[in-house]
Length: 409
Ligand SMILES: *Cc1c(COP(=O)(O)O)cnc(C)c1O
Image 1 (cartoon, protein in one colour):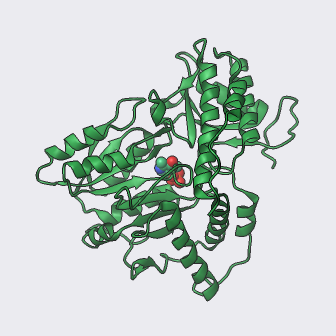
Image 2: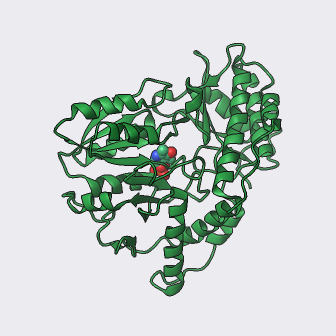
Image 3: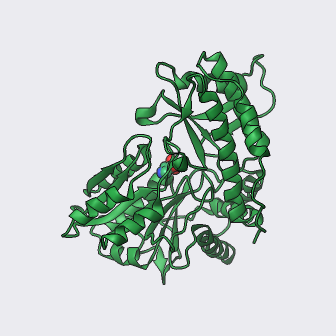
């Protein structure tokens, strides 16, 4: 697992603690599954694998009504696909704007000539469903075609209330489509496409799904599919119509991303063997330990959890806000160069103010503790104020009795 990064002695030993909030650690099982010779992507072996994997992915999305359309593309591609297929130039969408990723979904929409209205969420707070309801209630002519939200804002480490926003839409009886980006929440914490009335979902391979970057997908229900048939956008690569027959994906624009399907099958096997709810519980446990650690550091004017709302701090990563006048990237650089702990940087307006500890995907307790130990050392070396004992607090959190694991399905 060479990284080319020099340790304290200038000699690299051991492995890197890769704690980015995407891409995430790729299990050997997934890597090995992907390493195989090419097959005929129209042949029976691949077609069966494709059908089976897309069907199983629906289990992770908790949908029976929707179906999945996958692409060889980063998550940005799935954003493009959602806008290109659902809307027409001049349409209006309402974006729950809560950070870098929701902003960038808006950027995509604007490029397609879609008018973007935003409900801007105050810094360090979760999206307010009442604010969404208020805006929709004012739209008496139903000009707003869709509400767009990111369940997990990866830039801030905050979870946004997907079910509650749907309830708000229903309360004001607004017919807008409901579109949710789950790229950094799927397979890390709960998401329920059908129960929460989500019409379109965006997902990606390289976060909770433990695969390399480069595959993304949309899940659409009958309503979103109907709306897409009326779109006047030019589209080729993202066009759902030639890819879908009888409510399921039967081809890609060009060659199918074959290795990704072998990887996806291995990842879904791993998730099923652990049990999806147990996967969530593990993420919760590791997230709680990370938050306990950061809360310990935050005493003595140290870095703190970005989310001011304890409930909204998400289980897939922790964004750590550094005290004013201190550079988050200095901590990140020391953590990386001296201790081989790789952390996410602050994005957009949070650059230099925040570092992000990813704790999603293929991760266990000692990996987390090792990384937190490296960060605590880096805080000291960076001269950033903090209280010691963060790792101890994380251990105490992990030691606390936890709910009994549910039996894997
Ligand atoms: C990572 C991420 C994306 C973008 O995915 P890419 O594969 O980098 O294009 C979009 N939305 C969210 C919430 C993400 O976390």
